[in-house]
Image 1 (tube, rainbow, N blue to C red):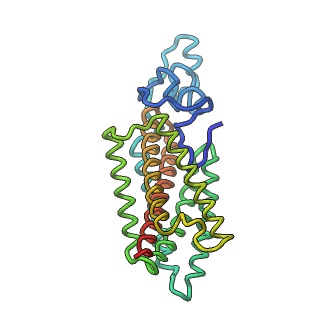
Image 2: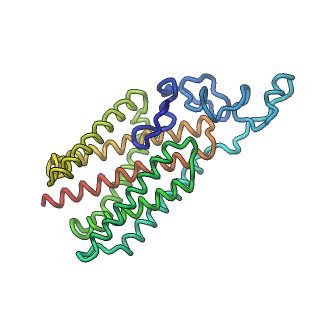
Length: 303
């Protein structure tokens, strides 16, 4: 069964019978030559009857049987780069707007910081639940994705305001610039072919991410039940090290996201897949932003 965890899985990189074949030549605008390497081929819920997998002709099977001409291949209803850009911009726009409103409307001075921080944590929990629900759904739900973005934005706005006000002035803008720089750098490296997303790359990233998350969970449990900084993975020199590791993992997830988008367009995925691509990109960018914000806070606490 394909994993739909938003952190440890990317659509197009796993199939019911194992890994998708990487680096196989896609057949854009027509049926795939073979199933290996095409995450939208055999076992694909989008596939239509043989002959023209994307034809919107309900009589296509009868046409084949009686020798009638098949419906021409059409790109209507397929995911395009414009679809991905538009839906990603919409999702990030909702997130940024919610973050700005929470920054402005939820003060973090001494008298109100506990209430504002509580609202932020509550929004984060709701956003996490919504993200998990979408991750386990078989189809994209735009309303669910945008609602997730709104709650995640509230959380980011509160946390960013706390760090910017009480720890490091300008930290939020620095984290935004750092996130944009990583996004641009990975995009250029991916398009230039410096990053090759293949089976080995996928396996390494998944294993590293699993180990990273488990360490952070253990550290959090020690901090909750033992007090202090837990095992110290989020403070001091170790905190800086793991912050850098987190950013590098985020960059690797971006490469997986770009591969997902590229494959979806090449193999004629349905337009709704653009929402899933936007969802994955948003999750990854939030990850990178939070790692930058945490790293900046640690560096300023050590000064």
